[in-house]
Amino acid sequence: MSADLVPDDLWERVAPSLPPRPPRRYRYPGRLPADDRAALRGIVYVLCKGVSWRDVPAEQVGCSGVTAWRRLRDWTEAGVWPQLHEVLLGELRAAGLLDMDDASIDGSHVRALKRGAHTGPSPVDRARPGSKHHLIVDRHGTPLTVSLTSGNRHDVTQLMPLLDAIPRIRGLRGRPRHRPGRLFADRGYDYDKYRRLLRARGITPKFARKGTTHGSGLGKSRWVVERTFAWLHQFKRLRIRYEIRADLHLALLQLACSIICLRRLPGSSTPTATSAKSTGTSPPTTHA
Image (spheres, helix red, strand yellow):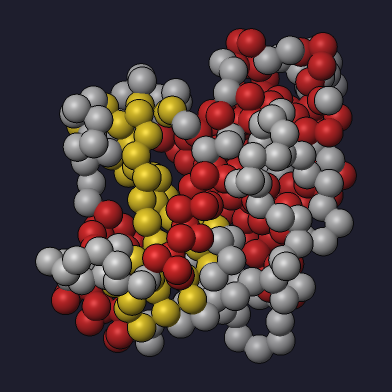
């Protein structure tokens, strides 16, 4: 099982982004460092299973949970996960599996048990400390960018930062793509100020209007972002925020987005996030 957590197609895309190891000392070199692939296996194990770092089975994974956590910290500070996500988005675009003509945005609350940065009283969870995942996806639900804020931040405050965070996606000849054609959102984003800002960037806002009855018809286009949140929450470590450091929780979130992107590539052997059988919410390996 452990070998399947980091298949070759995932490792081949992660390895070029990893920072080089410092040279070993000539005298008293000490113990050999754990293998990078084993450390990544431990990170993916925690992400999928939701166990604590101390409970990572070293005999199956190949390193201790503490070592995996330290590599997660070091690789996060080196910017590995955004690079991985950008590479996979470029491959999806080259394969014709990325459609940015339409995009959807939304936010989702998660409880934060240990508080830390980017936590706040959640308005949907009796003011308990929580965080928010903010996400933009393309027409097929492929995550384009993700961010983390405190649980009491309004969704619309992350609209422009998320759009600015979409990488310049290559994969085809010509200029890289980094802006959707139309952006779908619920009533929480219905502000004239942000409609004007989107139009100034050449993006057509498709926001549900406040004060109108439900049934705007936009649900047929923006349901994909809700499905992508369901995919993300299949990774058990993301259902509740356990990390005190916000950058490490965001790193796991970005890694999960990369795994979802990798699954959509033809021939991907990336495992599902949980050991459960098909639940009807697993992302397809190829676009139908």
